[in-house]
Length: 470
Image: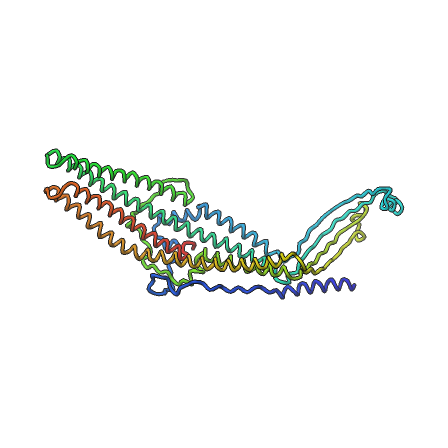
């Protein structure tokens, strides 16, 4: 009776000690965050990243592409499978504080040598040359979580699950941004193709005019050759643009998880619209909103729990083991109850003494890993601030570039008309006409490129702030 009381007391102490678990406190490290982002006038709490992607991108064609991408993009599907796998591990971790229970059935027949002591004893006491042993028993093993080791292991599983979750959100922001960038690039190529075709028509008229003037003796064959070369250069540009459009359509199709195909579009780049009030919000809010930064913080939290595990491994461990079932040395009376019943309970405390410094090394390495992850977290924040600052300055600068490029394009279009009139009147040569056309073409192509760059800078800012996963 006294032994049973001692065993019960051991269980009580073990269970009671779980309530004394100490968990390492986590303090967020100081982060390299400014009060407001560079190139912003004021520290506004509003941010475009708070907009859902359907609100941010109003073009129905683009919305349809993004919906397909979120549903079918293989990178995103792989990330979601990683989330599902981590979720299963998290479910399993919730059962770590429960005992391990197993059931086993065994049968054994031993036949010792007749000349051995065991063999002679069997013949003397049992009148048999062999001995049988049949066993069917439940086995139980349980470790008391005195120092919080198991709770920290559960915390590690939780942090790993959250990392995959944040990782999937980060992939979605990248997919959404990549689809938008590809779509706007496609619209730019469409615009450049239309400009080139318009210029081809103009070059054809110039060539025809030059040929007529040559036939009438007012021009040389060199002028005709130069005009023909200008037209051929435009035809070459059209072929290149058509190739780039097909390649961009293929890339966009793959992004949305489909085989390469045509991308239907009904609007031009000039008809696209994005939020005009570009607000970045506060840098501190970006840390909790941007998935990859949040993911890096979760890595730091995981390493904090790993330090707790390494520390707990250095302290005594209390383990309880028990087994019970039926046992017999004859098969016929194996399951005779209660005669064949047996049971045992064992409680023990184990304190590591000398492990060749392995436990101390594990603790120090875990601490160093935590310090390393603090630096990685700070670096991720710094990189994020840099990306946002780059997008902000690009957007502001591209506004100015777009205005200047528009003015230049208008000026050069007017220059073509002036050059043609002067050429017809004999006040300008064919080179001036061709040069005016070439400059105008390049200016219009450049204007389309700058408009696309500005759209891209706004999309980059949206992604850099953590938008796109809602």
